[in-house]
Image 1 (tube, rainbow, N blue to C red):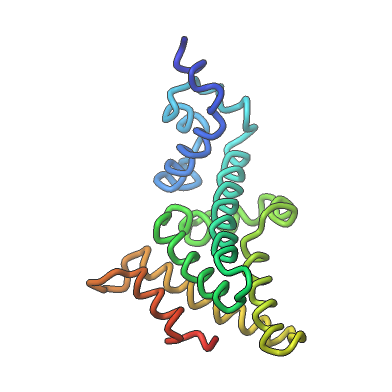
Image 2 (image 1 turned 60 degrees about the horizontal axis):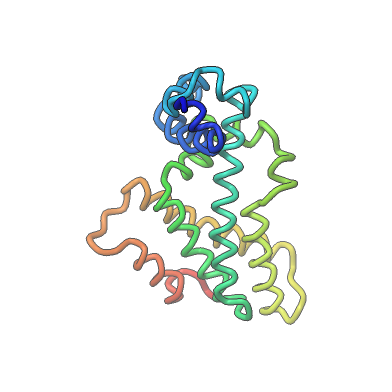
Length: 202
């Protein structure tokens, strides 16, 4: 059995996995299907069974990132099915943990020189598929609706969404990039901030 035949069944998943690593290391301009094929140990034509271009592969990588990110947010919600405030706090913790554990996804979706290109490639793909921001925003709506007895002002919703997102996103970047010096457990510090009410008035 040839190496390429051996890889064939899981080739698409491997192309996405190795592609993420190479994209993170090489950047958009130096990234190519040929390099990903070499990393996977298959012929340079093999990736074309699944992707027409490097942009198609990058979009698949981005969709995979969104799927995993959304999954971790939904798991946070499911931990507290009847507690909207706890859902939001746990989701904030999961947000930071996801990007601290997977800094390559943070760079891909927010910090890379091609992050905006990914957003422009196919906005419809994310609108029709899993969208982490929607999962997050629905949690904001539930929390505000509970606080205001069933009615939530749109300005209040957006203000709360920006406040919460800005807080956890900022912490994720500072920790993932090691810009904040701390001797202890970063994630425990994040949990203390979110659950101790240090910044979120929930």
